[in-house]
Length: 113
Image (tube, rainbow, N blue to C red; front, side, top):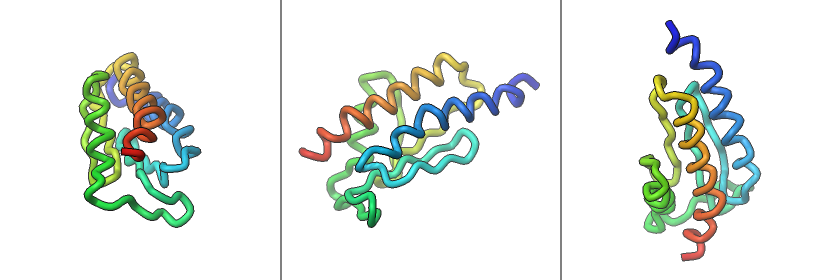
């Protein structure tokens, strides 16, 4: 089955694209299981202290991705990424580019609001 055979490469693409985000001050953890990923936004990386619930950073980050072409959803301040296994590599890369760009460039602005 071509779908199953393509999964390891797609899983690596996701891991490699998102791995640099862990170096950011406000990313506490990146958890991945296959093609499912959770990117945790934290106030303090050392203590894993969260932002107040009413700041809704996860939702704001996901909303900032929409005009760029990606619809994701948060679970609190965890950005959830679950691309369809049948997604072609070019579309997957575009999705990953949007996620990385938004977290790198928009998250700091959203934190300051």
